[in-house]
Amino acid sequence: MADLTDKGNMSGSDDGSGSGTAPPEYTVRHTGLKGIYYNPQTQVAMVGLVCFMCPGLFNALSGIGGGGQVDETTGANANVALYSTFSVMAFFAGSVNNMLGSRLTLQLGSLGYGLYIAGFLVLNIHPGAKAFVIAAGAVLGICAGLLWTAQGSLMLAYPTEKDKAKYIAIFWAIFNLGGVMGAAIAFGQNIHTTTGSVQNGTYIVFLVLTVLGASIPFLMVDPKKMIRSDGSRVTIARNPSWKTEILGLYIALKTDPMIVLLFPMFLASNWFYTWQFNEYNGALFNIRTRSLNSMLYWASQVVGSLLMAVVLDRKNVRRRVRAFSGWGLVFVMVFVVHGWGYTYQKDYTRASISAIDPADKIDFKDKEYVGKVFLYIFFGLLDAMWQTSVYWMMGAMSNDPSKLAYFTGFYKSIQSVGAVGSWRADAVLTPYMNVFASTWALSAAGLLFALPMIYLRVKDHTDLEDEVIARMDEHGHVLPVEAIAPTEEKVAEGA
Image (cartoon, rainbow, N blue to C red; front, side, top):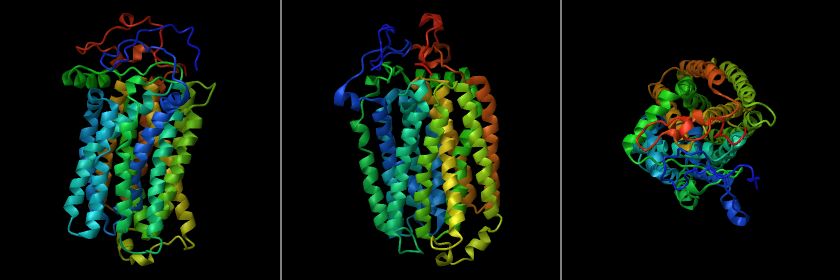
């Protein structure tokens, strides 16, 4: 337990009803089994389990290509509907999260995944049910906007500054194990199948697991009762009206405009999935090999997130130095994997792939499989490194759960706009090379735009003067730092 004798008792609100304007309150943490249950790492792991069961299994289906269907057009159109509603919902989901609370928001957000998976099961039974799958995608987009905003707020608010990358890695590893498990199930059920769609049993297993995942938020600790590892309480601002909450969304963007420089990186973070899942995995490999590739892809994400945690949470290294080191590592990976991918993409087109019988596509027993599967594994590594870096950058800008909910909402909204564009490009049969080139260009541009944000905005500590939303009163007025605490008082817990 942290030594609290020199910290005093700073009167922060912890009842969930205050404005969240006071500095954090320090208190004694729970011990024994209750201490384990109330441990922030345990709670972040539970958030990871929700995403393991819900988005993780969604990712497993997406990673197979076309939602496990031979005709990838329905899956692409469902994704267009999904990310269209996702992009709108996510922008305002921070306000919903701050009004309803992260636990309820997470609960509501988890409900759409079962419906989406059920849509593909129905499509397997009734091939004419394409409209139902697309409608299920639209509903899931609304739910996903809520789930990911609540997830991001909790994951970034629970750790101290020095442990943020570790908490992101814990979440990302557990979450992506859902993709690994889901792909393993699909591979096991389809191991003797080289043509056709994923079998009904695969969808049924996924459906049951997503329902179980949706029940986990009921078991989680109320965020207003959480205590960080250094003894500081997580102060949850709860604004009294929707008007004030929407105003907070505007103030967060106006007073911290550097977040806009991350928008291209947000946009790229879902754009690259289309080429990886459909134009590469879906195009080149038969159904059982696509399942195996998906399992390896999500397994590599665990490694990628842990690698970035080591880089971004290095002890005795200034946070700004860590930020530039992480950026440089991701930049190198973008050019390595896309340069590698180009060597394969230049040799095939939509026309050449459509002329191949599905049974003649690459199988994991074929000689040419080895090099191509390693590229897919490296794309999984890059994805985890990219997403971990984005979350860490937002976490470096604030420790306030309300502000982080807004930032996460921006992230998921812009991310979904990118997904709409890329999946729509696939649905209208844009040439593979064009999709690949846009993926590479947008990834590089996203990193270049993020560089000045890191230079100008990421500091070694987050001060109370940076926490504008935490200083906003119930009427939407931002109070000066002097009215809250001495200027030198830190909101941060030590980087």
